[in-house]
Length: 67
Image 1 (cartoon, rainbow, N blue to C red):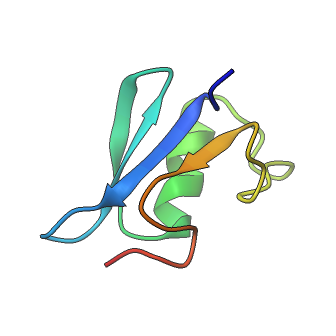
Image 2 (image 1 turned 90 degrees about the horizontal axis):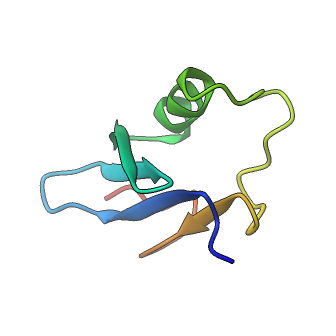
């Protein structure tokens, strides 16, 4: 089963597209943006782990890669 949140590879212009179950949440430029998108999607960001592969699939680099 695929993770419900996908952080796509960095775009040439900067930032990473974030999707949830195929729906675009926005373009994140860092983990603060990602946390805000997850909050807006109804997730309890106080308990979300960015390294949880069952929740977040990182493509093109992990949480430290934004450019």
